[in-house]
Length: 175
Length: 443
Image (cartoon, rainbow over all chains, first blue to last red; front, side, top):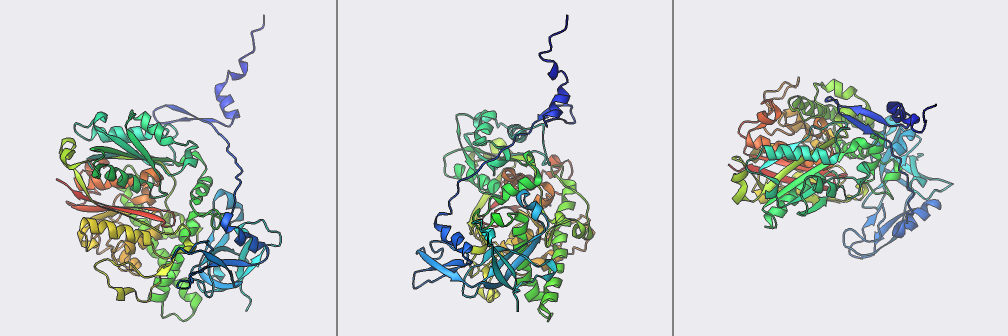
């Protein structure tokens, strides 16, 4: 009479563990740790809330900073915020020029997993005339060797906006 | 502080989860104290940085019950990279306020649970997810932006001010900074050769460091800390009980904490908050902090030094365990903590002042031993399991001040000669929060 086969597939535990993408880790004392894989994905429903006009502005080819409405302050933020960090007063939207210069820069040869496939990429902090703070952006059409602090740059905007900060990037300014 | 314990920091500890790692460090600490049993501990402060790494919310509750601490009071501490330093100060506050007589500070991180580049992504989520992260969220990139500006402010406009061609001047200045950052990397890796808890002890040369992979220009792999699994604990108690638990208690005489904007781009251009040994005239032309310096580190130093009565840190401190997530940030922090003036960090490194005496670095270090920084090897060589790191610094500083490095490391090399006072420095984000705590010999 044939033996029941109910549990036969579990007979080779090692093979089953490997097949499932898991592994046994044996440490120097011979202890066996079972290591399994557990995927985790999630979609957030994220509102830009008070920052929304900035991202809508990018889709129209505009960089909107913000300016403090307190006459005694008038601080201009290149990365907008709806209330002034200096005096606490509400700010108003303040269009920034499409040209600026590099406050600092780097070329990333590695990155987070989400951006590894885009390496190498350049990051830049951009200064604008009349603004008291700077803006972080990607810098394209140039390599590490071209870049220096103070370099003039100009903005480019995606014509297929994804409503992300990546809708804006900078390139070396045409003289 | 009356006792502490640390697990060896490693790329991965697959045979221990976070609870067991903390338990091992905790048991070590209990064994190293006298008359200290868990019933003497009134409560805990437990730190870990990211829920993403363990995919386990409220993991501190699991540490609490694994250690058998229920139903005592506990709270989880999280403050980015400074999580461990904050946990140390939270335990200090629990005792100083009179709420507890004896408090356990315990911290850990298990970063091996995801691949390295995914881990970098989790860390980069500690940057503004509207304006910063989507651009290529990567902390090494952020620190590279900061050091490029630091180099511009202090080397381009300093040592290389005479070079006419702008690009050539900046290229020379960055090459010089890369060389000096490599000195820091050599120091920390070589120190760690004598620390059995360190993850990456190795003998390297400046050329080795420069030749290691370029991660984010101008920072190379050997100038950057790694991800780690590890745990550390510290037990703090009031002065009346300290001698019951150890013949060599260490007094916490100063705590400081400072903050700055989450986004680098928001850092203002203002004036430098001065230490007593500095003058406003020193920094007339400097826009501060910008992205080149850590105002949070300066603020933390000011508060901690004031409380501990330190007016001349380089003379009054015998060593610093400094949060060197990057060789660049160690140099920037020398300036923030007043070991030298702003702008002098590179030259200060080259004097050898932060190196240890009697160790062979293969470098000329005439001032070695003046103010040893990261005698343990720091984050660059020990690893950086975030929630444990600041407590690890506390434990290493504690053993230094007890003069018991030889006992715990099995090697006396890193023991300083009769140190009286040391500082531990824990740093988060792009410098968005920093703690400094001062520890002094209490026996």
